[in-house]
Image (tube, rainbow, N blue to C red):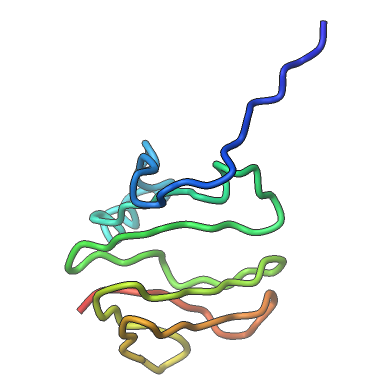
Length: 116
């Protein structure tokens, strides 16, 4: 019997995609730091496997992630609204709507974002 391939949408309204059911895969005490993060995994919806695309909303005081770096995936962030602080190395940069940041895979700069 042939497996049926799920039909993928051609396009969606990103804000209408349901948030990820499990808010975090971090164990405690780290999960507390990202509490208030709402992630909509847009890339998964389209079957993307080479890179992830997420629409992430952060409540005041929440972090998007713990400081990290990727060995195989580039990371790109585009700010739609709000003014989160990008933390990398020992620097902090306030990002504003329309700003973006990119980090090549294997880069030496661990990063994290948190709203002001």
